[in-house]
Image (cartoon, rainbow, N blue to C red; front, side, top):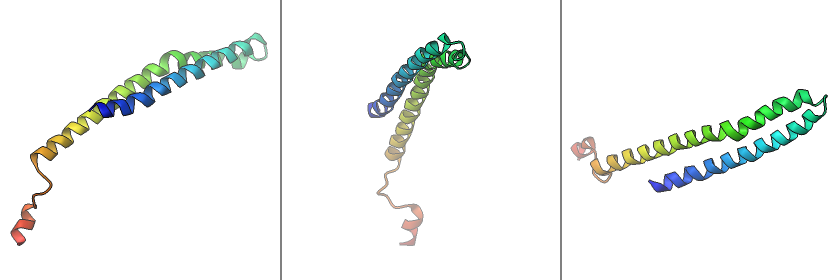
Length: 99
């Protein structure tokens, strides 16, 4: 089950890091734009959006990743149970009756 966890956690943590970097860049550009009065109309929303990228979106991605990991583990568990209860090598009953 750990293989699914690693496959999902790596892209999620990488995406969260990228979101934080993009968010901080947005904040810096927003502050620079806000320094000019004309750019304030674009700078203030950019600051707000950048802060969302830094503080809110990584938490959402972490929750989505945790749910994805849980679903993958449940799916794998169900597959193992199905394989253990009915081997694939046995013929179906309707095939056995025709012979």
